[in-house]
Image (cartoon, rainbow, N blue to C red; front, side):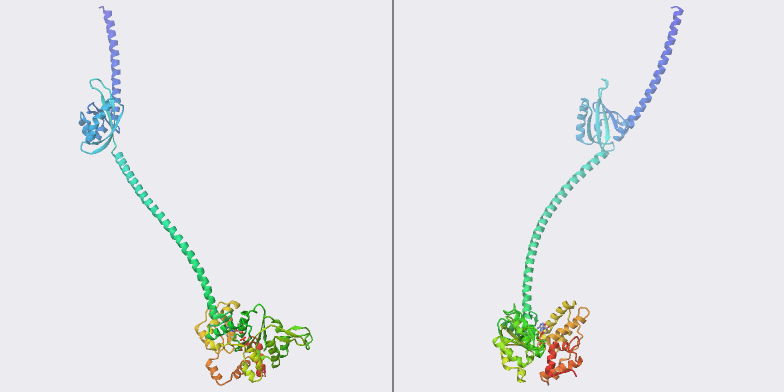
Length: 539
Ligand SMILES: Nc1ncnc2c1ncn2[C@@H]1O[C@H](COP(=O)(O)OP(=O)(O)OP(=O)(O)O)[C@@H](O)[C@H]1O
């Protein structure tokens, strides 16, 4: 070899060496980079949140990351060649695990299972495992990549959840059963309620029926009571008044003449009305003639009528009361006051129903029922020659004696109640209480003006009473005082004395609020007639 060739070869060697050195440097740098990358991946592998294991075909651990070693509770170095089965807690799991590896190796893709595992110190945990087979060189055979997650918390939670669900379902079932029962009970109660309501409605309607019946009975009873204690507007429950009422019942339907006898104010006018109202004549009028109230010279024309010019001042023809009462009733009040000369005429009308008008020769015939009343003792009047005996017997066909109020003081409470009601309404008051003391005073008084006087006293008291309690301001003579005087005097004398006494007290004023008539409890016209009779004149 020549030098030139040798030099060229040397040069080529040097170049080749430089290239090799350069390649070597490149290789070194690549290796360094590879080492860095490896370290990075090794760290990523070690600190991954999952445990990673590489197992051989028999399930022996070939490699693991740090997390895997921590999960199994040991150091990485101690795990090499350890069978993974050792960390499976139960026998079922240990039987299952080789089958699981086999399925992985048979290349059936990623396999997944859950196992109860235990760490080297015995701590149990629940793991989720995923595996896949990795092909390697023939000498090593296939390896298995296994990842492991500690699923204990999740599982506990899941179990708790399941348990809660079971408890919830049980509770729901229990509550549903309870609610169904309550519902059934409620339905039952509603049914019972409806039944009770039906029964109540029926009971209510029965009560209503009963109440209607009671009301009817009550009305009936009230009628009974009013029949017992009153006779239309005539109040009285005493034996004497009951006797009067039954006499009225007896005589009313007859046409018989009735003579009502009783002191002034005992209710003779009311009784006359009651008789007329209960007679067949009730649709015709009852004409009242107060014989005491008519001036003597006018009584005849008032009773029998007059023709025009019958006497001075008779400018027009006038029908008499008897004619007016034709078909009805004539009530001759205070008959004892009738002048003697007229009593004959009256006797004729009563006997024959005939009379002549004043100034007329023509006889008039009437069909009249006569009711007469007197507060005088007519027999005394006959004896004194002031009343015709034949007329008395004509009138006395059916006498009814109305007792004075002091003889039936048990009627007083009822009468007071009646008049309080009547004047409350009339005057617009609301008096609802009459004390026992007041009633005692009223019942002890002798009532010379009888019911009329009592009525006047109550009317006055209603006007003057304040509030709801009846207060009577009138002062009454004590019965003892009256009786001691009465014992020695005849009735007429007593009447005379009493009228004179009251006239003096009222300074001879007859009418009005402070008049004697009101205090005596009689009409002013009656008082005038009495004064005429007794010859009482203002001095
Ligand atoms: N029993 C009674 N029940 C209710 N009110 C009665 C009763 N008795 C009398 N009165 C009343 O007393 C007053 C007098 O009654 P009435 O005029 O009928 O008596 P009298 O006896 O006819 O009196 P006189 O003889 O003075 O004409 C009337 O207001 C009447 O309503």
